[in-house]
Length: 446
Ligand code: ADP
Image 1: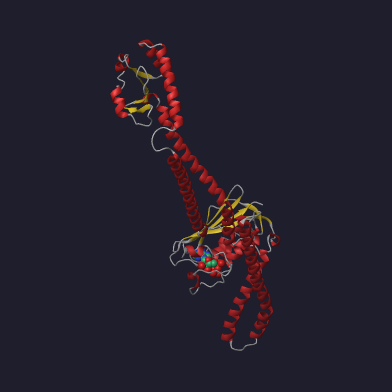
Image 2: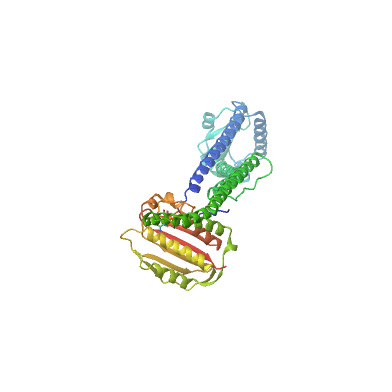
């Protein structure tokens, strides 16, 4: 006994679950980022704490001494203003050389005094530091005394690099976290879909379980639960069907017996009740017959426009009246008796739940590319959002429908839905309490 999804806007649950999922996602994301920050911070701290407190590492110091001595040798091999200038050009290095300081002064390079003050005292053999825009290095005891300079402005990439790298790294971590979390969440998503489908009434839905892991166990448990639910619902439906079936003959016998009663008043009221019971039993059995599926339909090519016009005509005089607005020509293969029954049901509801001052019910028929759309719009009491989710369920009646004069079993819409879906179509309702209701049926062309 298949129950289909509900097509209506009052259904709220998936939305709620969605919010829950996002929360979980956020938590995992947060944990992930925190872990990443802690690991990176921890590593940074480790590297930092392993570094000698003061001075250059022995390797760096050796390299610096070697490099500075080579420079000094090169300088000494042509010790002149011209030689120094060539070095400027070749290596992009500036130098202040004792005895040849006019060039350095021209360029406003820091003086020996200034660099001595700024020396960071990393090393006993090398003077290192920064004065204004210049990084400087001097090999102690070199002759002639020479200080080498690099302008910080000439190595902008050196500064930009760490910034770009850090930003890139953070971006990479973000992307990786996002992808990993999505991957982690994917089995949960599969479960969510299952929960959603089952809660929408699709009891046949089963989730695909992956081999191995916790999620297989969970998935199997979920499917077992769905099996149980399906069996339970099927058993209840079978019970209802059997009881209805068994009630038919006793009802007929009571009917015959009642005819023998003399008191006409009592006879009339019992007969009325009997008639209602018989109708109920007939509707229940009919709804099960219809649910066996499309095979029970007696389809034929039908002029739907004519059918609708004809039915609407029948209700024209019942308050608040019915109008058919600009129906389009639709010829379609359907079971005309059943579709007529659906339309009558909708119209009878719209009349039953009309307000005293309601304007006439509006019926429209529109032809579309792949089918047709039939709408019944009333301006009656309307349906509360909490009821909208259930009105297509058998025996469901909104509170307002229980008031006197609004008799019914709550089966009409359930049967309508079964009929429409047996045609491969769908039906849904939109409404607001007190604002009328609109029922929409979509029937496909074959
Ligand atoms: P009923 O026999 O109670 O009319 P239905 O299955 O036809 O059973 O409808 C189910 C419920 O949906 C009704 O009890 C009523 O609460 C609500 N309903 C259906 N049609 C309308 C409508 N046009 N306006 C307001 N409520 C409606």
